[in-house]
Image (cartoon, rainbow, N blue to C red; front, top):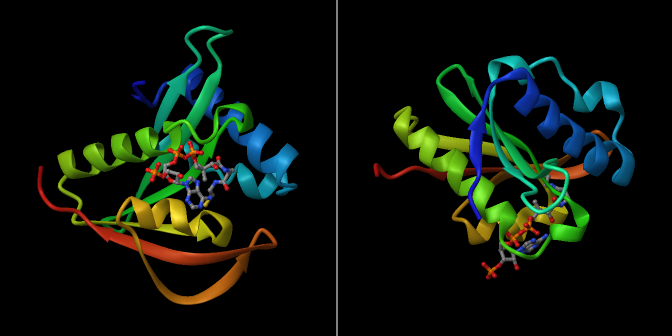
Length: 146
Ligand SMILES: CC(C)(COP(=O)(O)OP(=O)(O)OC[C@H]1O[C@@H](n2cnc3c(N)ncnc32)[C@H](O)[C@@H]1OP(=O)(O)O)[C@@H](O)C(=O)NCCC(=O)NCCS
């Protein structure tokens, strides 16, 4: 399964539709928090459903804030979880970050997903905190050049 990087309005809309399904409908996050106004400046890794309607089944977002790569909005359609798609979108983001010569990636992990990121080499730092009412921990990964 391959993810593509999108920045065009259609690709972005597909990613956002999946995030609405996962974060807003499933997890109860406020839509105003989920849609934070930064999608236009980001790159989005997306896996499209090849056998269905072509909607997004997995996504992750890369933002660059003051030279630091920030990964976020990592979501896999509920019915497709546990099949490796989350890891694929994360690797696509990491490959892109290496291409951009970003030395490090940071993210805010929901505590329930900390193990997922840890398997991919991210390390937790600092105290836990609430974000959108959900317990989170910050994590980072130093990127080795390709
Ligand atoms: C977290 C999420 C993105 C993981 O995606 P996924 O496609 O199910 O994960 P994968 O199948 O690629 O799993 C990769 C590895 O991580 C492990 N893993 C997956 N979810 C995990 C979790 N929540 N905790 C611990 N390990 C996890 C898998 O067992 C697998 O391990 P392996 O390589 O040893 O086989 C997905 O569960 C999801 O969309 N959750 C809802 C939204 C969410 O919470 N996003 C994170 C916001 S910070």
